Image (cartoon, rainbow, N blue to C red; front, side):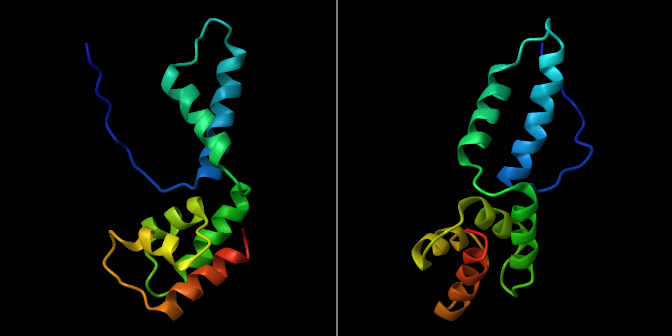
Length: 118
């Protein structure tokens, strides 16, 4: 039997923000001794803990700073905040699926913003 739920809304979150949300869920589940944590939730918590490098507030500030740049759209800003690319090649891979091709100077502008938080 499959249960379908209606999607009420969605929003992007960075990995550090997801880590905070998952920590709240984990704490809530820990209070209920009879409630077992699902495998998927445990894996999501493990992933967020392993790959979250910034604090949630810092990651949100980084996203906001990136969105001020002309060619950085919302999905790409969140990818950049999660990956924290260190060079042009890493950054180019994050833009590979996007609409824009950035010049060297534009890539450097993005890397300069990332460097303030990394």
